[in-house]
Image 1 (tube, rainbow over the protein chains, first blue to last red):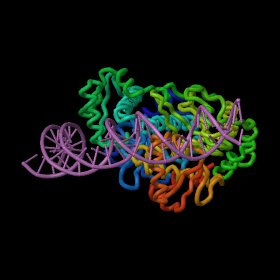
Image 2 (cartoon, each protein chain N blue to C red; image 1 turned 135 degrees about the vertical axis):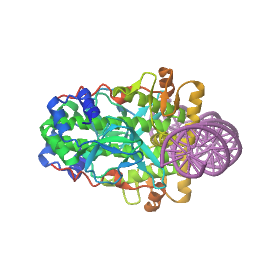
Image 3 (tube, rainbow over the protein chains, first blue to last red; image 1 turned 45 degrees about the horizontal axis):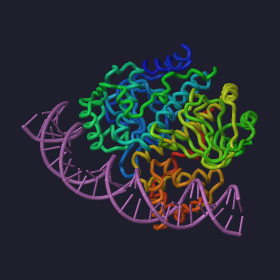
Image 4 (cartoon, helix red, strand yellow; image 1 turned 60 degrees about the horizontal axis):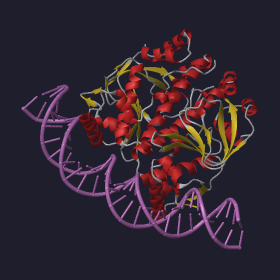
Length: 242
Length: 242
DNA sequence: CGTCCTATTGACAGGCTTCAAGGAACGTGG
DNA sequence: CCACGTTCCTTGAAGCCTGTCAATAGGACG
């Protein structure tokens, strides 16, 4: 049940078996969402939290004029709407970017569990702060990196994150996103994403065709992007005293 | 001691007097930082957290090529580096934007306090998620709003936040930032911030001269910006069961 | 086989940056 | 008290990066 998520907690946090099990017990059965379907909507009152078990999703914010921004790309093992645990209303929606499998937890039961087992509360807060770190890096990209660097940076980040869940090979990974979805995450138009990818392809830096990313020289791409994985906090939660 | 911060907790969270007092007891004396001085540096190992009591500061991320991004503008009452509580290393630095007064808390003592008093842990996590919400909105701005809208939106946000700490009048507020600092927060150059402000001034939408912002018609500015304050979570933490 | 969605490419426009220079404000030291 | 340096604001000119509009092609799918 939601095994990718639990495995991540086991690997990255100091949670013990009985705590992980207590968490596992309150997870609902998996549910399938078709692509482009909302899991939650901005402004909703959080009632259950969503754990992505398979497929791809994103946090989305809509602007008044109908444009949207994908503030986070979510993959298997990600907790989609962690802020829902503490905030009264969602600041963003969550959409399925591809068909995906989702497990759910009742918010109140999770809060109760956090009270009984403070280590769980700490672990979830840690997850939230890591998400924040990703968002922070994305914001810096949007503010100061060129389209070229932004595209390269996103591809590097996804590569690194997919590796931690065992879904990437050293030279590439599957990515079932449209160029428009990539643009929505990077503050670009689909047309410009297309041109940027075409240049990368011509230069041999990377290709993204047919829902697959191929990176011949990973180091070259990371240099182009100014990518450095520290902000992903892949080392886990060590350093928080019990 | 750090009264603005404690007052905010008292107003926005369900913390009780004895909990607030316990927190107050581990705060250090105030310290004065001159403008443009770092309080923490990206990559540092967090040892004490910083509470801004007076003046202005910002979270800052540096890019490889020397450009920077201010991912959050911090004012009196803000906890500058909340992620330091759970993460091993800072993903960003904190700089003083003006001379400012800072109170500090030892990280380990604060963590110990969180263990003894879970309500404090919850309140701090809530603060972190609210910060996350502001960053999320800023990211959407960077991704999809024009320079005009971004400038207007920032001015609206600061207005709303300053009001909650009693530092703004209905038609304006003091803001000791340079146009370059504003640009660094909005992903713009100082030159373009200047041109944008000049246009606003000519149009009578708002003025920002001599470190003071004046907004003759607040509603008009908010409409221009597409500003809506829900993401600030001014209503506080109600809704999280004890 | 038609339909829809996505990718691709071209032409053009415009928002924002870059480079540059002058002026105002302010503190500092002689 | 004034000369001077520094920082910030202001404005202009030129150019590039990215967006907008548009048209075509290709694939998936019923």
